Amino acid sequence: MEILSFFQYGFMWRALIAGSFTALICAVLGVLLVLRRLSLIGDGLAHVTFGGVAIGLFLKQHPVYVAIPIVMASSLGILRLVEKARLYGDAAIGIVSSIGIALGVLIASVAGGFNIDIFSFLFGSILSISEAEVLTSILLSIVVLVIVVVFYYENFATAFDEEFAKVSGIDTERINALLVLLTAVTVVLTMKIVGILLTSSLLVLPPVTALQVARSFRSTMATSAICGIASVVAGIFVSFLMNLPTGATIVILNFLLFLAAFTYKSLTRGSTK
Amino acid sequence: MSIISVEHLRFRYNSVDVLRDISFDVSAGDFIGLVGPNGSGKTTAIKAILGLAKQTNGKICLFGAPVQQFTEWHRIGYLPQKLVHFNPHFPATVREVVSSGLFSTKKFPRRIRSEDRALVDEAMRVTDVTDLEHELIGQLSGGQQQRVLLARSIVNRPELLILDEPTTALDPEARENFFALMVELNRTRNVTIILVTHDIAGIGKYASKLLYLDKEVVFYGSFEDFCLSEKMTKYFGKFTQHLICHRHGDS
Image 1 (tube, rainbow over the protein chains, first blue to last red):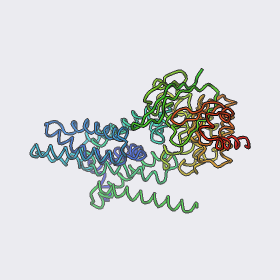
Image 2: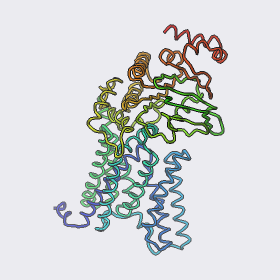
Image 3: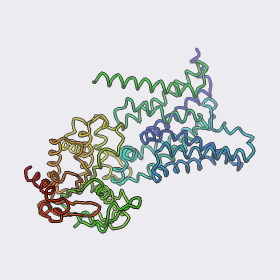
Image 4: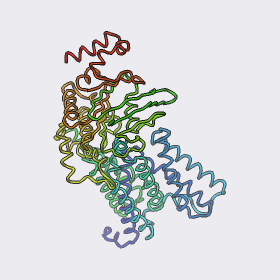
């Protein structure tokens, strides 16, 4: 009966739709990020968003519109540090994210605080999604998926062997830039919708789960997307039935999926030896 | 016509000369053994030729075009040094990896079509990896991975094949088979080959020319001339030169 009552609530439908689309794009982008060792870029860019939102509020502009170009520029900054300064991805993300959060704190301090809770822009809730936000997540998903499909082979080649990709005539710097820019826009827009905890976990956990069991690059993408969507749908149901926080439930379910895949891989590897 | 033309190439890294005033030409049909000691600049020279490392000075032309403006990458096959440039846990099958060698032949939006399947099948057959086509690249041995990457470098039927230490992960039998395949590609398909190796005696048996680098061109000519070269006698000492050439004669 409780399951049936679930479908009476519009906010549940909106959470299911927006959550599934968010999971889909995060899972697909996440595979490419994890394979390039940029898994933590979601977390890093979230910190930059904090700075961007603070600047927006300080300038009395819409914080998200100000944050988007700042976060996009920061994502390119991370890439530059990796390519030109020859830093590891995690170090580059650490530098940019700490500058982002320091900037946010400084501006908030100089402004003497804001009337709006700055954190509400970072920790959106999947159960309080508006119809406009559902539409945003659908449109964003379509744009991201079309770009990933069109540049599928370029992304494969660049992620697998960047040097060979260059000798194949692929502009790897542009492909890398495209990936981090898509990630930046995804992080800012979905963070407001589902919260930073969920966005950054959906960028990492479904891809690493898929990597445990996948048999090809294509199947890794598909498995990652299925894991992401399944965890969001199941998480919304479970949190509703057990009265638990939805975002955190989805993250834990994702982790359980990873554990199951890891155990399966360990057992099957053991049986083939 | 020169396939590769290198004029006065100089490459500096952190204020240290890696390559000094290198000049040489490679003609169509040549099989060049690029040899030299560790740190002699062999890999840097290869990367400069392919535009992967920006030279400090000098001019490099590929098929008559300056490397900075070169766009006909489908004419070149490349096998990078060792297996350091890819993540061994990457979830790609052997077929996916070999197919990626065809990307240079595609225009945007790049797609692998059903008619490409025959080319991939042939490259896998020639390199003896057909049985592994559905295996993940990371689950193969070093020698198998090397053969898969070789298949990737020849799947586009290149006119120029550049191989950077391709035999390091191969056992002696596999190494001989590998060299035999190179000779076949060179003689029957007229593929121009540049093969980087430490094994002067081993490559001397197959290559039409040796290019000996030690930050500069020390020798460029046939193996026979290499063995008779007084310059190389002074460079190596008579005993070492004799060992290299005698081993070659034995084999």
